[in-house]
Length: 493
Ligand SMILES: [Zn+2]
Image (cartoon, rainbow, N blue to C red; front, side, top):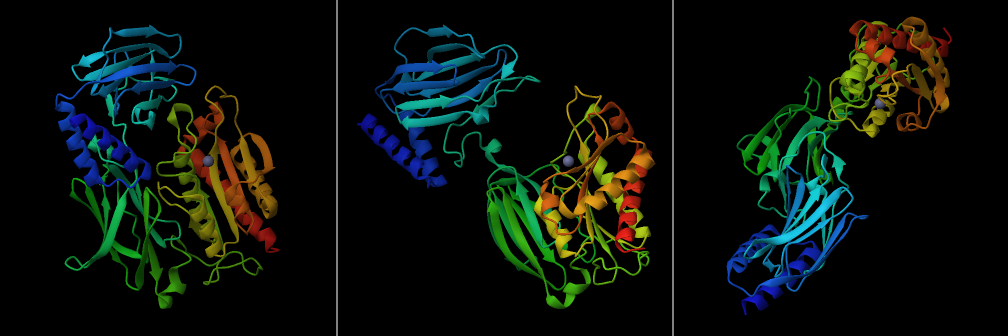
């Protein structure tokens, strides 16, 4: 009777799994029942057959009653342990050696009600347990697909995997909770973006007691490194608080700036929640197009046909590549592209401002920024030119490859050549030419746009020079001079 109920429960569980509409409560209920049933002295089910396909890294098992396998990775030696609760082996231990990265499979009776399959990896190899795929053909037949074992860099601590519906909580609940990794304004400051490491859900409302807008995210925890957005004066938000409300819930509390209306909360992907920020019309013209404008002086480039901002000055977009969790290329001694290009980009912007150009940075700090907001910023600000700054890489085994490359698409050719020549002259970097390329930021921008690869972080010469702040200043001055020269030529001066 218990067995029959158990079997129908498993069937129900599988149908729920297939429909993927499996709420947490049912899950907990099921787990509780499951534990009780497994503990009960039910008729033992048997492992009928097993087969390991080494070329596909796939284990196939068949049992005569439903089973829910569980896996864990154990170290020294590294082995994947798969337990089959409620299954009796009913025969002596099986031990098979193999030649691949899985070098043996052993199957034995772990305890009275559990059959254990141990797959030992070749020395030095490990695998990512979260990538193990459990596929129930039926509740009695499972395909367990392992990721390709990789050579381990360090020893891997034991990790328990719950082979369940991915969204369901499990006993390893901590590792299932999303970390809130960043809360930031996007490039054009019309969205607040809340990024998590795993799928999240949200609710939102005005919190009357705090007079703040509240977005609650769950299941989630604030990561140690998360910071609130950078809020400048004139921005759309005057205050953001991040709070861990309880073990599962993070609250993001927002006070909009005067004249800013909060729009819809959206979830463009499972790990991203966004809040629209809309400026009331009367305040729009003054600041909207220039969220990070750093401007002084009058334009040096006087009479021209080049586009200008509403305040009459020419706008140049400087776009340091990558940022935040995306380091870009990583080179000799861990030299990171994102830091180099940010420093150079900031200095280019400052140089241009001294010449009366309204230089806008797509990012002025170490933040994550998609390609599209970079393009949008250029389009919305009516920029005269767009200059993206990157550093190149090839391979740490090719320190001999060094040099400057400047890319353009379409109308950016003259700008590319002018910047390229200036950088060659002023820095002495090697010349790898001006090239045409279909990079996103070049194709999607309507003004002349270029992408400067200032050197190779994997190159012996370039890496040591790019590590030097004085060289980066030289590089920035050269790029700024190239931009100014191009603008003056284009203006017929
Ligand atoms: Zn890059």
